[in-house]
Image 1 (cartoon, rainbow, N blue to C red):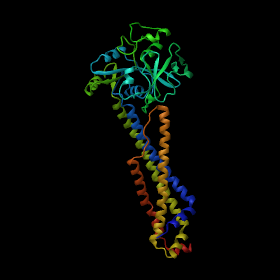
Image 2 (tube, helix red, strand yellow; image 1 turned 90 degrees about the vertical axis):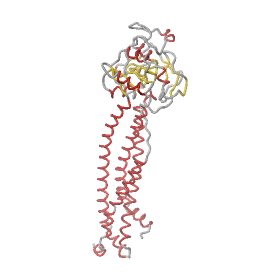
Image 3 (spheres, rainbow, N blue to C red; image 1 turned 135 degrees about the horizontal axis):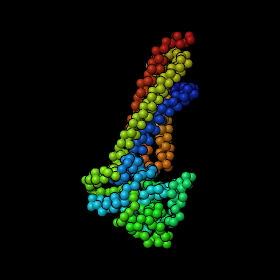
Amino acid sequence: MIPARFIWADLRRLWVGSTVVVLLIASATGLGVAVNLQERALRLGSARAAEGFDLVIGAAGSETQLVLSAVFLQLAPLPLMPGSILQKLSADPKVEMAAPVGFGDSFDGMPIVGTSAAFIDSRGHGKLTEGRIFRQISEAVVGAKVKLSIGDEIKPLHGLPDEGGHTHGELAYAIVGRMAETGTPWDKAILVPIEGVWRVHHLVDGHDDREEHEPEPASMTSIRIGPPWNNPPGVPAIIVKAKTIADAYRLRAEYRRDATLGVFPAEVLTRLFATLGDVRSVLAAIAMTTQALVAAAVILVCTVHLSQRRKQLAVLRALGAPRRAVFGLVWVEILILVGLGVALGVGLGYAGARIFSGWLSATSGITGPIALNLEDLTLVAVLLLIAAVIATIPAAMAYRQPTSIALRS
């Protein structure tokens, strides 16, 4: 039996080649682990973001864009529905909550979303950790990651400053509350009464019958907000919470015709996940191909390495070391290198997934859990098993090498 200290001394003497092999294996393993971790985190984070949205109704168009805009706040121009749809849904006995969602303005890169107090109160959007829900047209509630304090005042910006955007000077919002963190894009949103969005864009406020309304700053505190709305202007999306599951399906069928579109965000996400799964399969195939190439490279490196150690192994045989000891020496050394490479690769993959998840959270607001589970440990076990099998090739070559020929060369 070869002592462990001999194996360690052998690896230290050949540290350059050993390091190359470890890094090759680590890079291939890290790619596979990172793909698995990030795909799972994105899937779980997206599903969590859609939990509080039972049904979304918008104008006829793209289901995916409607969900991306209304649920994930990936804002894009959406066609407006007639305000009568909001009025009808608010009075529908099948509806527990119908909250309009209005976009278009922002502050410091964060979207300002016009909605109703019932939307903040609804299940799935978290309770307030500070302050209270808005009660006036000039008040706002911010997400958990919005860097504004209670009492701060902001003015909405329409469009982008470098694209000709302008500030709405006729209305300033005072921050009166903060929502709990949800790990969704709504953590970086600023929620205001929908009446404020209508008024700064010179539309009716939903509580009168005039076609236009120029608000006077002094009268802002007296403007009523929330349902019932009378002759409201058009809205891009309405978040609906039905009283029962059956009611939700009836509402979707009722508004999935003519000029409106009713969707369950979970169904749309399922199709997106299927596409994401295809992408993951491609990346997984690339990772597997990379690992196969690395395995071939490891065999090649080990073979060249063995050819340079022929005399050393022959001396061991001449000193009385049995062939199985030489086989074990080479096999154990290769397995140690592979094990170190796999362990380093898991660490690199985990770190890479964390970094990408942080970037994704900063840009989109979607936060998913990055954690190793049984699937990842199974991948590690399979890699080690394959390595144990592959390691027998160079070990067998060393095992079958004639001693006399090796000593003469």
